[in-house]
Image 1 (cartoon, helix red, strand yellow):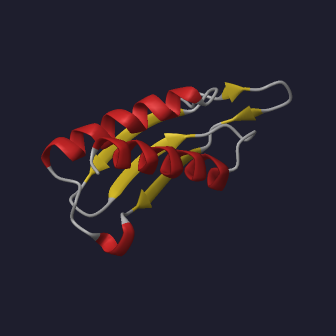
Image 2 (image 1 turned 90 degrees about the vertical axis):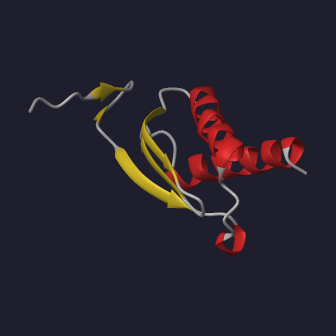
Length: 96
């Protein structure tokens, strides 16, 4: 298996993270159309950050699994704060 390192100005990296997050109180709201919308918006929002790549997504009824490659210039918590915050606002606008 060959490793695919990516480059920044002063570093080589291969930072892949498996992140799981869920709605408040783990309500089972991620079904049917909402599931597709969440998956699509995760790709859209991740493309807004430079060099962030979503490798896999699995949306369950009450949680979301994301395997994402985040460069070291972003903290994982910074990226997830951005992703969850924007995703929540977009979902509230579309599904009041």
